Image (cartoon, rainbow, N blue to C red):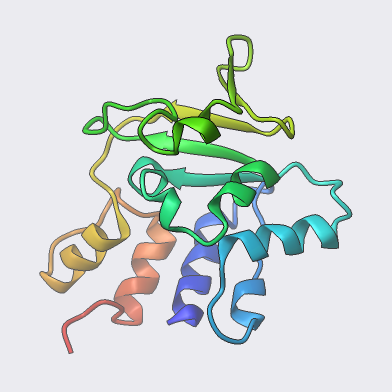
Length: 166
């Protein structure tokens, strides 16, 4: 449920002042789309914020399935967290060539700069096989999730019996 996801996110970021939680997507009626959420924050903060949309490489490879994906990529910076099993570290093959051509690789910033000045960064991370679906599966199977989530989140999942088999 949204409530439990909210609680786990709050616990995960509580010691990091660079992060804050917003429930704007829960406030909306019907489906919530990323492009609308970014537009909301840009309007609310009068474009004074520099927004970074952090996404896994697997999700980024499906960006063309997102609502108004072209607009979304031009509204804010994207940080694509790479995975070892994905070879592609660029835009080719992910977005149509005519759209990719609007982005130029910037050697100094180590990312692709778009026509609006926003960047798409591909960043290597120390690979741990961590995904929400993997964590849910491990909990359902009674396996440990120690070191896969912050301790506070792990305790919350156990206490509230989240992801347990019904």
